[in-house]
Length: 159
Image (cartoon, rainbow, N blue to C red; front, side, top):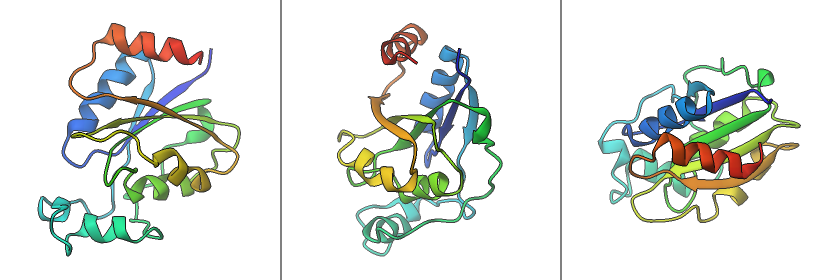
């Protein structure tokens, strides 16, 4: 049996809720990806071209600093990586996280929360940040999926 980690970034708490439910359902450890400078409500106003999130998402080289680097991913075989969908992709802090560790030989399964869009080009945008890892598009975990549904989803992955 492989050791699993649920790592997630949550700007408003929605993805955190999904991550906690997933970790509990599959018996995985939980790790929160936190920015060195937390996002404010104004930072997240995607309609404002001067908002921090807008600037980061327009700059594909943007890598927000992480609050810590103590995820110890070397202990895990499978990493469920969660985030809110921003502009049809993962927030650039997810690239920061992937580039902070060696994911060679790991399986990364994405999960996300979204107000209306799918994964878009999230997998494509993250692959260069985790060379040697297998990144798989997972599920949108909007709402409150049951533990049974989460367990079935993970079982369907064959991990």
